Length: 429
Image (tube, rainbow, N blue to C red):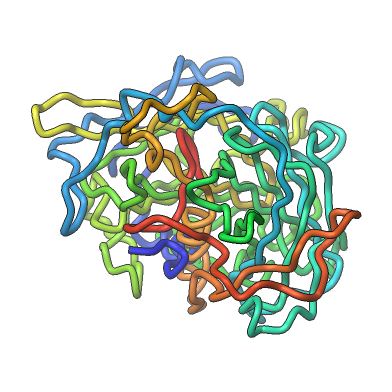
């Protein structure tokens, strides 16, 4: 099913009622905690402000991974897709807004980072390698459902990128929280239109949705009422997918440092109305998961912030039909105060090797558009908002300055594949 018709950010908002604690590590206040885990992740300990774990703690799946109404393709979990040499292209797309208002406003921007960069705010973050452009508002809704689009020149194909959408306003005027889409991969077989242009949908979540996440089981995103103080925690959402971009049931997800204050949940499998399922310790047919109140900064023993942002390593695991347990994708991702990070495991990162004739590797890696929409919906659902996950049209054509024009094509923003919409490779998508 097409992820652009689902709500991943909405899932984050729904996540809290059924969330289960993940592995433990140093809390945001610099103190060490420990907890047992449920919901698919094993526990770990921490000392001296650093997680003791060498990598993600992921419970072994107990049932074989599966895809609804299809034979699952897990080939890219063990053999990376060969996409061929990278080339430089111009990319445009609609911007999907999740949250109260559901309309793109002014003062929003999109920055594109290399997959190896830190996309965080200054001074800790890197300068975006591939530039920053304005998100165009007042685009006709017949072209972009939420009235916003972007266009940017000179992006590389077949390489992992990070899309960061954000609001330049601060304080009470801030309309949207920072949203990080990991492992965006622009591909000929996913995003190239018949006329030669490339199209990819970006995602963003509004402050109204983020701060409305309900405080079920005594847990909400800490400091979400003050998104400007640099001390809030974060949300992470994603979807485990097979090599043909289809949602995987039976997968487990875990992290290297998700402390006792964070919560992990899987969902009920209802893509029209995703809700957390407290009884699940592995993904449902929707493949969705969410981590709410994730650690997003380092602090000393008295609570003073010593580092804005925290690097997590997340991983999904799937059990094959022969009983072998394999990684569904693993990646280091950053979480920042009062932000949403989208990470969707979908096998190994692609290579720039030339594809083998007749190889099935081409469809193995997808973009983040769909995964982003799905994860975004998770957040919106949790906050009680109802949003459709993807626009029906694409964004404006690229201009020479890299900003979007008001005319957008009528094609879909997340093109592509037969079974579902795009997701990230070894991370989100």
